Length: 143
Image 1 (cartoon, rainbow, N blue to C red):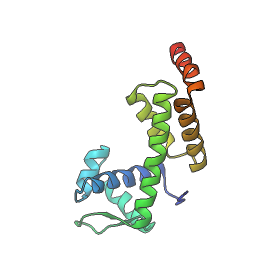
Image 2: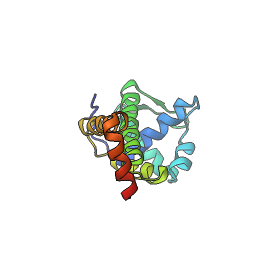
Image 3: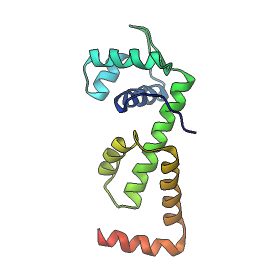
Image 4: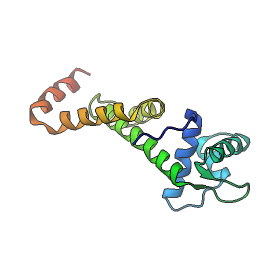
């Protein structure tokens, strides 16, 4: 389910942050986002205005920020791609959890849903099929 909006990687990070705060049941405020993303409040305000124009969030200054249905779906899709890539890098390429996550943060913005699904299929096949587990173990030994 590819949700295409013409938003930058940076705006996707804001959307992801809003989603993560909201998922925890927290009221989402601009200050929290600024702290979480380590950016200035003025940058957050500009990003929130842009996300609102794209109809991904409901935003009014000094009010809690909420995701629209479109925004929630987009954020979930970003996180899905992130988790697929992170898991692949960690389990198949044997990267540390931190390196896998940091790299996935960069790639999640440019990878298509189709490519993410292919990574997922390859991961599932290599980790669940007995005939591939030995090959995977040998690959891990070579790293």
